[in-house]
Length: 238
Image (cartoon, rainbow, N blue to C red; front, side):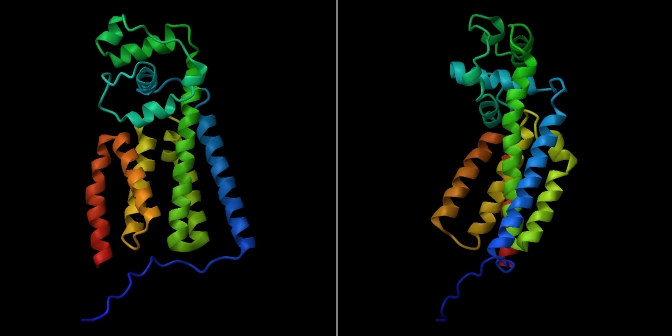
């Protein structure tokens, strides 16, 4: 039979020098810092959005009471991630005897948690939103790395700049909602699948498993990874 030929890796630009790499990372870091400042400062004086209070109250309830009954439509990733600072700041929370907790009423629970227990709602929001900015930064890093791998350093910087100044990414970058978690994990999983289709290594396989697990925890729309993967397979076969 004919000898098997190795699967070629994705096309990439020539490797830059060490000095060029430093400048590329300096520009990328500056862009990411600008993103963090713009996204976070834009929410500094904004009130609670539609379901932010719900995500924060339900997430804190999960940490405190190990209770998963309340609000199962959205993924638990954003709830747990955004409320990690509460494990240190320890805000007051509703008692288990309260009817809102017993009857699993997420919006009533959120209103009481934010405004009726003596907590400072602006502090609770800022803690959760700061955690969401970190997810936005992680998404920006993935955009840069993925574009750089295919299009080279300049392509990576152009893609990152497009992400940083994208109104949607800025608007949702510091809001406690599932939008940023599914954006990060779905994009990360897609990139991992694409890289696995070119070369299977233990590192790539582990990254795929991590991103896929987080994606499933992020939102039920993670099922869109199936048609996305089918499309990548078709492109790779062609």
